[in-house]
Image (cartoon, rainbow, N blue to C red):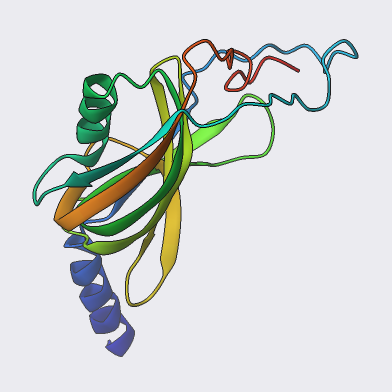
Length: 178
């Protein structure tokens, strides 16, 4: 009887949980071919920042949408996301969920989960965003690829190093360039 009551209490607490997680195949199409000896193990590009843009987002701004708008307004074609600080009042991100091709993604969403924004890094390649975030609560730090559904709480500051428009980064974000 005690076990049944304990299980009922656990189930009732679990039913009210806000955090959801679902796994899915990556939307990218992966080639089943093995690595090519014609593709170098690493690509190196030497460049310099043209300028540094520091963005501040206010309360209740959807962070990914705000980043995309700011990148467009500031005419950033290529860039490096260098840093971020602030807090969020909910979040959604995805992480890799396996270690063999094709890749699977695990989406984590908490519409009531507040957290400190500890860092953000990533790239802007030909106008396409690839931001990763690290968040922290009192109990844990976690992170992944920023998804729509992450809303600023107190504020968010993001620093972007702007690279030249003519920089060719087409292979950097391609999983099939191997």
